[in-house]
Amino acid sequence: MRLFHGSNVLIDSINLAMCRPYKDFGRGFYLTDLEEQAEKMAVRVSRIYGGTPVVNSFEIDDDFRKNSDLQIKDFGEQTTEEWAKFVMNNRSRVYTDEKNILCNKDNKYDIVIGPVADDNMALLFRQYENEIIDFATLLRGMIYKKTSSQYSFHTEKSIMLLRKVVDKNV
Image (cartoon, rainbow, N blue to C red):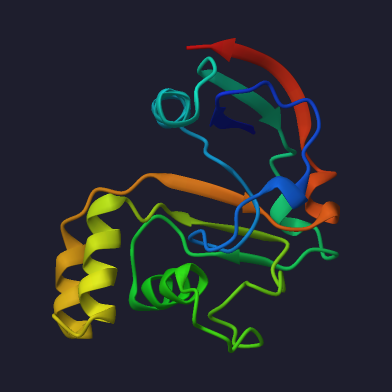
C-alpha cells in the first residue's frame, strides 16, 4: 500500500520528536492513502511555513494490520461518536485521562486509522467544548461532512514498517 505525506520539506527519515502534539490521533507521523489530499496539505504547509510543496511517499505491506506486535486502532471511513470523542480528547490541551482508551496521548496505539477532522469539524468541536451545542448536535453536524483518510504512526515500532519511495514536487 502506498501512503503519502504532504509537507514543505523532503523527509528521508521520520523523527517522531518533530511531530506536533494535540493532533486528531495524538502526536505522530500522519499520512493518507489519497495522493490529492497530500498535495493539498503540501501546498497549505508551504504557504504557512515557507518552502516548496512536496509529497513524500512511503510504502507499507498491505497486511500490516495482521501484525500481532502492534496496537492498531481503526475507525474505518465514517465519523462516529467514538471517533469524535477520541479526536476531541487528543486535540484538547486540558484533557489528562491519558489511560482512557479514547485517547492516544500516551501512544498506547502504534497506528491509528480513520477520518480527518477538517476545519469545519474543528469548529463543531470548539462549539461543543464551549457549550454552545450539545453532543447530539455535534454528531448531527458530522453526518453530512465528507471526510478524507489518515493513517497516523505513533511509535518507532510502527515507523519501521514504512519504506521511503519516490517524492514528488507539487
